[in-house]
Length: 201
Ligand SMILES: N[C@@H](CCC(=O)N[C@@H](CS)C(=O)NCC(=O)O)C(=O)O
Image (cartoon, rainbow, N blue to C red):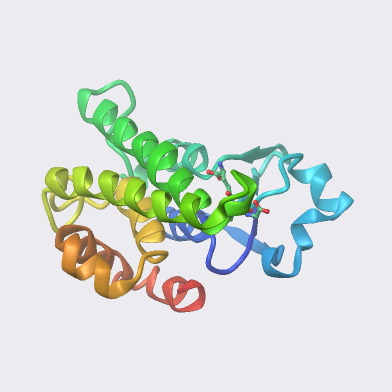
């Protein structure tokens, strides 16, 4: 079985939702980042970067980077059809946008939530990070077909975007990014994801 090291309200929510939608057997080990449980030597042995999520695969190996986990879960559970088939042009687009979100929106949110890690003037780092994240949400807003990213098919893009969209102020999201907001609502309404959403959001 998979073992997911995660914490409520973090990027581990997407991995939990992906495992649930894939029909995988998994357990969640809570590493509460709010009480610094990720900063222990014990967790450093699991993830030297001391962040969640970390995922132990059924063979005992450990991987980090949530976006990579989603791609792996899709490929390890092809019957769940959570990503287009590897090697196809549709998969290229899927992976393109997943990495787009990881390196622009997720990274921008880290600057928003941990501004003091980037500069002494934390307030201005946080403000610029919000504008930076918005700029990338605007590009997604133009690209999403609706209700899901590629139309009717749920993919890892939707699960990843749902997770990140829960970090944004709900009123701002609805006003400025209605397609992202509708996508988030469609994902959170899924029976397997609704309880995960409740717990994390
Ligand atoms: N690049 C990593 C980033 C993971 C990450 O930033 N996790 C945050 C929670 S969303 C965390 O563990 N924060 C605690 C810290 O950095 O001290 C990924 O995509 O999985």
